[in-house]
Length: 95
Image (cartoon, rainbow, N blue to C red):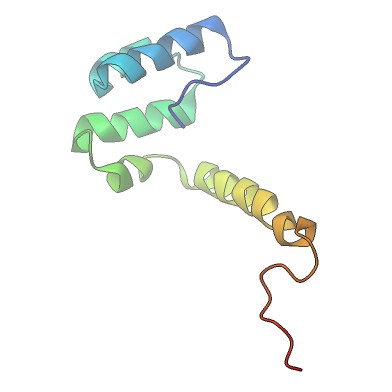
């Protein structure tokens, strides 16, 4: 969520660079624009609970936004088995 992404606005790129270089949540929080709600929520979690407590940091993201990420992940993961070659991942048939 906090990694640099291609095609972002310049202010988002700068803010992500602050986090990537320093790993200081408080400093990065000042750099992140207000419209980056999910990223700011994770950074607030890191600032309050410590920089290595990932679970507690994610708990600061609003529930509806967590569900959005979950649904996006599921939508990406579901079609993968269908796109594999037939027989891939199945046990061999008994002769």
